[in-house]
Length: 413
Image (cartoon, rainbow, N blue to C red; front, side, top):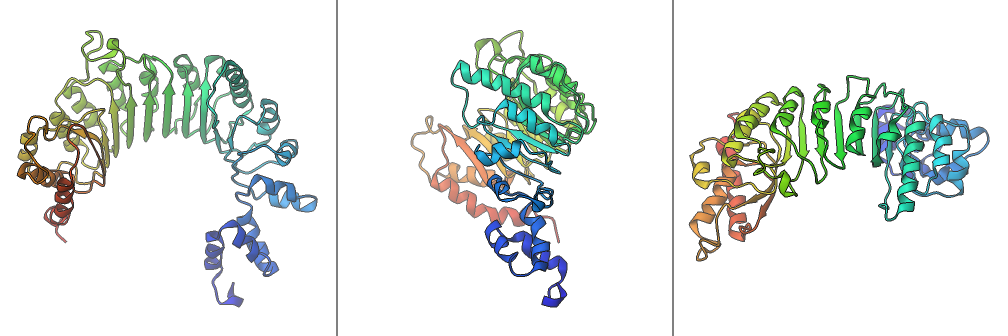
């Protein structure tokens, strides 16, 4: 905008930074501002705005829409679903008040769809709702355009019969779904692109071959798999993930709730330290590690392996407990995780039940704070577990050590 003394690119940055209401007011200043601001204003309009656009303006305005969140059904939505316009890219959050028939009419028109999210804010409470969800999922899966779809999130259960006759995904990079175990294989076989980089599977029950199927997607950067209460994972299945050498995020949740799935079960041996070490030696790009299943190894050895193979780790969650031997920790000369910012469910640093006379200012507790600061200097999120809560003294020791540790272990300038 030379006439105002502002370069055009700076002016556009100003417009893009404005909220919708002040931006709309700016468009009234001049026709020049109007022409510059309309594409920004209509990138992600509220759905009710569609009801205000008619006639010659409709095609121009609606062609600007790149993203839209749909939360409520009203007359405007019903009218819009029956119109013939398309969107260059649409992100939709649909609750279960949008009917399956409307989706069958609406979705096929979105030929340029890149990102689709279906979520319902009301969990199914009776058979009627479950049946409606079943019909809805069939409508979505059968009607969803696939040629340009890059990201798909479906937060209602996908069953095997939903996938029958489903066309392949040609461009998918990000998949986040809730599904039954027998639906995993037919769904993953529909992903024909080798470029899937993010995969999140929430499997409702035991699925013995899930990790085997997942290990075929070697371009994955992020993998999250959560199993239902009957899940049993063998160490061999977990070791298949060593093929995913580009992973930056790995989350496996197979909580041993039933007796049959605990580490003591001879048919379900726990994951050993040697196997863990071998797995991490292959996944050298990990930043986020979250593993919840049966362990049969010492936590000190686990931490040592993680520190040796994955020093860039930024978040660490190794299940419901993380018992660290203080004597072992004292022997470690260098910080274990210099970049770690989050640890989850730490416990048993100091057994306060065995040492009831120890107060918050006991030297061993203060020393504990100093040790933790040394090995985890960047941690900002730390959740301790009973019986050893972080006391005020421990927090103080942590805070006071931060500066010293930062100076001591920072590289020379």
